[in-house]
Length: 475
Ligand code: SF4
Ligand code: FES
Image 1 (cartoon, rainbow, N blue to C red):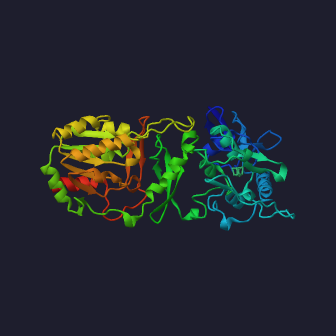
Image 2: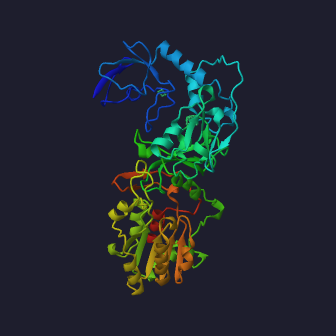
């Protein structure tokens, strides 16, 4: 460990840590632009300058390792003057377009300008002007706002290795642009550039001009559409989901970045509430839960077939409907090829496989269930399913199981055409999506990951646990 003082406060930090991290450990936030914990350090913006006793000049805390006995100060007039100078410099060519800028409310230039800027500018010359530029279908760049921190360039160079972005020209004419006419369309992680850009230069085409950030309430959840179930924010306003963003855990690179597929998955959960099914049905007609429960009772034995992408609580409650423990079957077989090992660790798209197994569910036994249904050893199948996570062959097998069973009870948060497969008696229950419930999963590394309700479901739509309670009462 290394022990030093920050503004007279003693702090111990692991050997090799940077001064910027030591300051954070001491509870002192250091303003920074070019530094990002998951990118290579270049120390060009100088916003993070601090004073070290005995050193003749201010030092960049993002590139200076902490040393034993160092006496660091971040609250001296020299540091304040340096920060104000950097702010004035960065704002020389920056437009005052915060009212129409997408980054307003979450812009580091805005925040630091207020906290550390001088309020004056000596710039008398006209500012450089550029037009918006499309960097493909995903990202738009407004170069007027760029402060040349090169986070974006380092991301495409060092993290994705695709090198689409590059600086061109020099001095005050330096611009960030795509290299040799490339776009960012084929980069499956391009959306991260919007999060990385500390100002409003790189914006997302899908989110641009849609919502002011201060209306959004970030709810901590997990990504269900990547194999690692990464921590993410679900940004919600008035019960509507607007975007998914990474929710970094410290300096852990994989949690800082998500794929565009995971980011864009928010669209699946922005379901038109007026189109939602809000009451149970039996053979296509609205029905009482007690009627469904009676039909189930008359058609035993019951098998539960649940997908391993759903939460442990839901799986556990649903499992109570199975006539015996051996009748808990699990499915889901989505594979997500690893495109970048630094960002993605597993390719198993069934995020709660371990949790489902812990609840007594068996994977890879659908053929067995089909034969038991055909032999009438199982007459009712309760299917909890999201078609996104089963490939065509698995969906075909599920269809056959529904076709052959005497009675099927279908719970689909996002309905597919599976219901049409059931030739025998079919009941459906309107069930919540994972954003409408609080639950947890056990990821592929055995870690428990909790998520909290981000959206309120329409009246009548309930969690599987609530439906099971009602079904068991109606028995
Ligand atoms: S576009 Fe954004 S991330 Fe890239 S250099 Fe400019 S300010 Fe930095
Ligand atoms: S953040 Fe340290 S020099 Fe830019």
